[in-house]
Length: 326
Image (tube, rainbow, N blue to C red; front, side):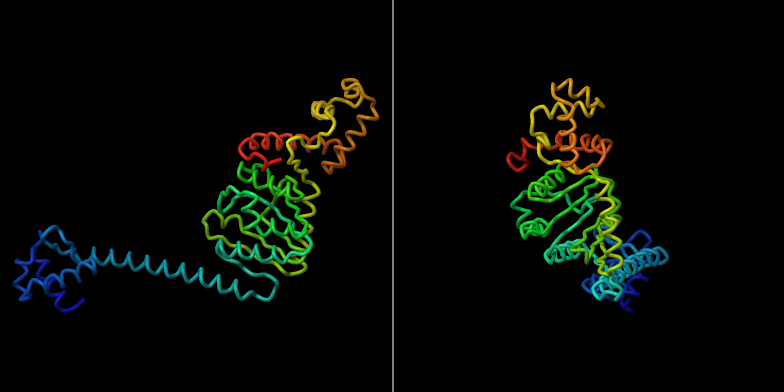
């Protein structure tokens, strides 16, 4: 505080109910100088303007406000320092095959880079939460999605989707499946992208809640192998997604076959109901198991139930999307 502002504060404090510039003229300062002194006191939190008058703020109260302001500034500086430190560590890497990636644009950029480098296969777990909810189209994916572009290059794409995806995610999923993605649905433990069995990106789901998006890039061979084994285990126990509205049905009678199977009817009962032989029923069931990539009748029942739910969702969306969803 300047000596002039200190003298102004002392004079102002004597006027408990406030004072205007005329009342403060006893300090020997002209109105313009007094205005500057009072504005300095106001910046320091020691005076407050009330219309044409000014009032002194008691020093203990002013110091408490000043302390709170400084504490907030220091906390903000500390958070900024922590964030910058994390970004610097992530950009340098630590030599053990792990690299931290901070920020939504950085995480998306890293995902795009590793997918653009893919030569053979991209594997992924898809699970909420998501940064944004987008209404993707085929044109948008062709221009912006590195995974979709990889399919154009002949890269195989396998994805396991956690149940409960919303309409927008379902639309995007259907576009990927119609373009060649092999997709299944099952209990997904985490977000994950694996490229060519050599590199993995693991976004942290909790970071999507507070919007400080972060992920870990993994290049350590042992860790990548472990993540690939985890993916294969989840893939094997997940159910194939049938994206077409008609699903695996080719013969008109196969629709009735599926309905009868889902009611628990035996092969003999199904054959009698459809007017075919048991051999035909068993052949159709074997074809369904091949199409849905399951090995047992129990797995077939679960696959049919999930596929039916998927077909119903597709049918609800089809009028909005027209030919986009097949």
